[in-house]
Length: 511
Image 1 (cartoon, rainbow, N blue to C red):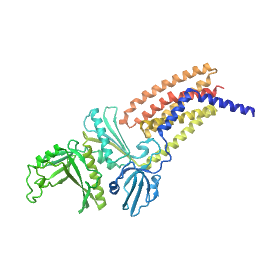
Image 2: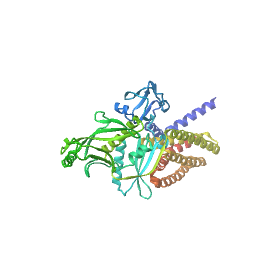
Image 3: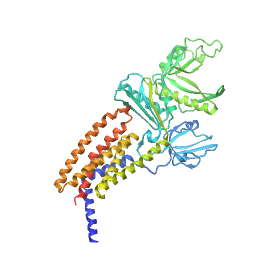
Image 4: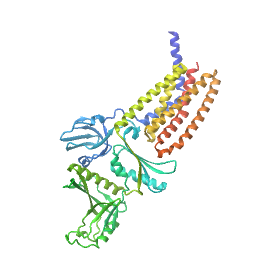
């Protein structure tokens, strides 16, 4: 009993001395800061609205970012609960209000609510990735303008979870990488694949264009000045027309007055002028409207823009009209892109497949840690060596994820691979430290051996960082996550976790 008690006292003394070591204090402080950066919120329940397509919900003010708490009285905690049986009336409760309408359809794109600040990339969350390349040679400033316009365009479109960044390849080509959750290939291609050049013409003369200099205001999400006005039966099904009001600048109104002043009344119908006003989008005619004879030579700043929507049924035609209206409103609010873009690559991953990737990563990561623990135990036959190595590995992974959450970097498969690579190099360094410490016989030997070990570690560190730099732009930036997390991981290891591990091994093996 006395021997056992003495062992406990010695163990407590070792632990106390270890926790007072400045290297361990730094590790503990960084781990606490990591928890703050990740901000785990396991109690969060519900699903987040990514995009609202339902007309009735848009008119009531539902928007992306709201958290759905219940549907028709059933509590919603995750995506599985979202597949509820709908009746003739749909009632939705979110964190911002209640919504209700008569119908059997619910056209809303959702995702699981975030339970931490960790952002998952496309590979893990699901969505669409598009790699865009300018069709002409552009400057860095032009790419900055494109990046800003594209972000505004997609924000206006109502997509809450998106990532847009510039990228270069090793040949110097410039790209724009767009990742969007909750959008189909068709929606993304239609929205960002076109330049969005809008022109209103009367005959061959341009009256105004879709730029902020000409467009002062666009009515959007307001039933009093925008919406679907009428639906008619056509040969292929149904056709509905949308219309919304825009406010022109004074210069555009003067141009409209100048052009219309030259027109005469229509011979067959004197209520209208002899020419229509034509709306062109990317040089294709979208719609043509009659101009009232009373507008001849009048400087009017308020005009109505209209267009069609087609579908086999009335509901499909209304949905198509709303989608076309939303797209045109977005282009008029943001303006056209500064140059034409080419879609180089487009990928789409379902959220379900992304979740499977996420689960498999946890499983493989756990098996990898157990495998390393087994190999280390076989090598040293001492648990007091195995445990510090495993603690250091888990700490490194945790801190890397915390840094990614702090800087807002999205963790995709490339980034996960980078984490595993950096932790793998960390295990090598820990083995070097352990062997050097165990080969020393005195405290002086330990210090000299540790200096030698850290010289090797620093040389390997700088070699790894230099090797990762070319990957920053390789593949148009698609493997940037691997390079970034590897650099972050080895940096954390060399300056935080490796010194702490050396302290643990030194204290545990001294006696």
